[in-house]
Image (cartoon, rainbow, N blue to C red; front, side, top):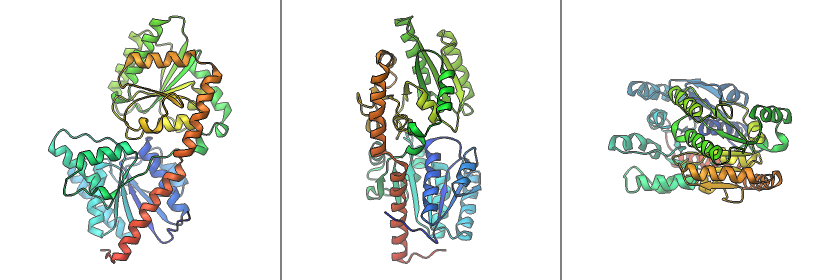
Length: 395
């Protein structure tokens, strides 16, 4: 389908551009909008992905968008409204709660259509927290990144006066399949990653270092695996952002030392070049103890032809075909994870490759970046057309 956004300007707002699925999706949608003839602006507090954003054709405007300070949120709203007027923005898209409050105020003040994407599983134990979270459903269109997320949104907000289920569209997050396809990954880099892993079954857990990503569960499972069979060989790499919770990283290192796994488990900082690591691994683990709203790692691993072990909740129930492209296990279950790792250790290379091949086909069929971007742009097109038809006045 050919979409034409010539003369239109998209403004996306996100806390910062440092790793993560929401951030990558921001880049991908911006690039697609530019390719469709439009102008793409992204507001954030900056980060390592800004360079790639600009290379893909978007423009970056730096504001303290990650701040939860009410005074800064209010100031950001004023600055965004001014930007919307100056650049004649056609549509505003927010991808996180704090900047969404600023973007909502700016969009309403300037009479522009407002879109949100529900990238995460936002829990609310208090009325105040539910109110804070509710900005993500106070939009003219609400994008859920999985059926699980859409169900969560409806469960959380059904009956609320500010929520309209008809505004929710489910658009699965995509992966750049051309980037993760095995024949597109630099084999020299794959060989380097394999060498850094070490001997035995190569186990990879990508994801920022925080408790709910399950790194500690994996360490316990590896310790059990070693206790059950001391002769079994494996090497593990955990790779992701370490700056958010340094105390957690220190505790994780101590746990690894106490388990006697220091020579078998490496913690590495986040990389912008993950495909070689995925391709080098024999199995990828997503051990999240809380439901992933989507879980890009599972899709990227399959796209790279590597089997996945994932916890059986959230988006993984949709993205992983249990027993076919990977294995699903109960969350926080050390024994189940150890058993799954032992299963993959026992498989032949041909058996693991066959499972990886099925994963490639599954990812290509359902989770391409192109499909995600096109579906998102169709939401934009519908909103802009509706605004123009109703004769909304831009202030």
